[in-house]
Amino acid sequence: MANTQVFDRYLLLERVATGSMAEVFRARQLGAGPLAADVAVKRLLPGLAGDGWVAQQYLREVDALRRIDHPAVVKLLHAGRGNDLPYIAMPWLGGVNLRQLLAGVADPADRAAATGQGSTARRLDVAMALGIAGQVAQGLAAAHAAGVVHRDLSPTNVQISQEGLVVLIDFGIAQVTGLASLDSAEHMPGKWAYASPEQRNGQPLDRRTDLFALGLLLREMLTGQSPDGQTDAHRQYAELEPAQLQELLNTLLATDPRLRAADATEVAATLAKLLATLGKPDLTAELRQLVLQRPAPPPAHEWSAAELRGETVTQPHLDPDATLVHM
Image 1 (cartoon, rainbow, N blue to C red):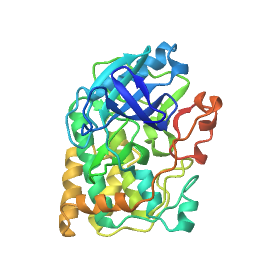
Image 2 (image 1 turned 45 degrees about the horizontal axis):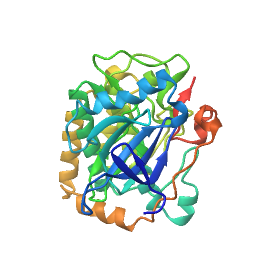
Image 3 (image 1 turned 90 degrees about the vertical axis):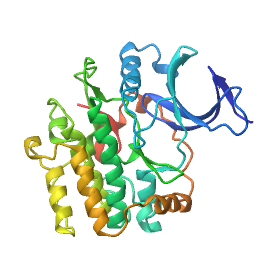
Image 4 (image 1 turned 135 degrees about the vertical axis):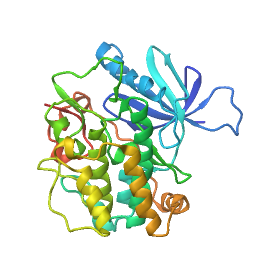
């Protein structure tokens, strides 16, 4: 295989993503047979290996995933070090993330505008949006029950697998009960456009911040409009039908967390009831077909040194998926 490399116990087949702290490879365990399933290896960027804080923050994902066992949350297969770089191995999900899915179902004219402030993609039908949000809510419920708050829920961290399953990924900045906070005064953990009001204000967070982000995801799937990352989350949108759906969104997006939905299990149950009224209790086959129809994603973005220092994410209105926004 061309361009492969050996890393610890894995053969790295291709790099599929690069972020501000880590890079992700499709890989295969050394010695595994030709029919063995591929895995995803996520390792700390070499240039950050000497930064103790970054390494600790990166390994927080290990602490989070070890606590959670649910099909809607990516599974931890192994955690280790290779060439002095910490890494984790997870099942290879394939498919696309929700951001790519939304862009992929857009008309060509819409797809060209599917980045930046108030980005637009064709909205999903109500049943599809409810089905995806329901599985995300189930994953959040499992995380919350394990004492984990994701804090970084956004379209790029919701993966639609090649089997049509919805899986919550990237717990790299999760808040884990019983573990000391690693937050610094220089940045807000999470994505500005999908952050709750209390998250933007640097206040203590709990599971309700994830449910606020879920409300934003659901509204984006239903309206085709991403949050602008600049103004109040309650930008005006047309009322949604059925009325119970609008009521749910209102409770998820309450500015005051005391008035917000607080139990992901209850939210998942409400979404399931709404979906049942539409006569589509299981959308796995439809999601699988959507993933198959979507064009292949572009090559992994290569981050510049300036981007790795966080310089570009000081303007979150340019990218709703920007993470670790500096205060």
